[in-house]
Length: 224
Image (cartoon, rainbow, N blue to C red):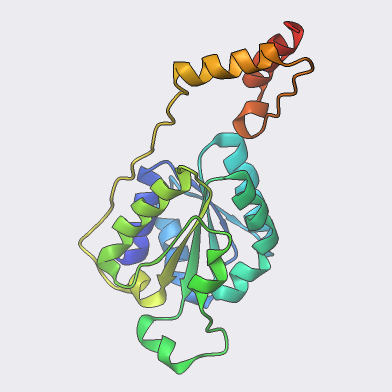
């Protein structure tokens, strides 16, 4: 098993089963690993903006992250607009960004870039798995961070040698946090504030605009 296999196994074992991909040469080991794991559904996208937009929509609809596969910093940059939207919406996405082999970075190849700096503004978590034995644990950490709080797109940088070298660490489990309910005192305080207002206005967003929450908002409005 190589690092790419360990990454795919960790993603699948933690419920990440869709990959919207626009790969380049640095990501070929990941692409090969996709073919070896039938539980992962790969979707080839001809433009990175399609991949990131699809991952954003998938995450919003399913409350589960998809992963993207992007080619170095420029590939990430091509999908940036949708990742900005995902960051603002706290959409869970695991971006897998291929990079040159760790020993090749020093040669500053044409597509070489400061990937951590490029992705930082629209990522809630950023880390490079610089050895094959750290890939699985780093992937699990990425998945946990994508759920939050606050949640959102995360960026796992995968150097080519970390993908192709062998590892004995096959997979790792992520921890999905549970969102705590508001305490009773806060609910009571809000209720009193609404009752005391002559013309109350309640601003709702995020998960509060989903169907079941809107039913409760309608009840609140009907109560006057």
